[in-house]
Amino acid sequence: MTTSIRRWVETDTGHRVPNHSSKCKHLHGHRYRWEAELEGDVVTVQGVSEEGMLIDFSDVSAILNTYIHDIVDHAFLVYENDSKCLNALQSMGDEHRTVPLPFIPTAENLAKWAFEQVSPHLKSTYGNRLRLIAMHVRETPKSWASWKPQS
Image (tube, rainbow, N blue to C red; front, top):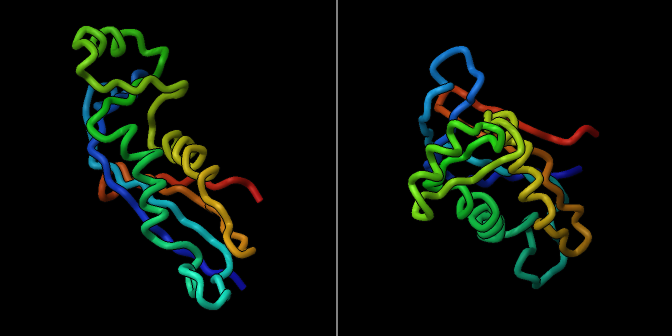
């Protein structure tokens, strides 16, 4: 039997979907929630800091802050082939935080990207088979996307 936990971080991040047929083609932003879902066995080694846990929530927060929050918070995510948007953002100079991406920054694509950023930094301790099973990205209070690898 396994246990699962979730931990999240929020960012204020801008983007646009350049070929969208509606309003998402315009420059805009969201209060994103980046939620990691982990699974594994509870550590049973007596006396260790992680006893009774999969991983300390603060360790998950540190990973999310380093590999998600600190990269995209108060930044603008832009598809690397969106030349109109890139040119406009570059005209603002080095003071503007622009994050070019090799994909259109939809919630679905960002969920996969976030999984790839976080997963390598989660380490199983004491043989507890800890692993990231999904990343969930909330773009608005009513709109979520999730990405998990195929089993």
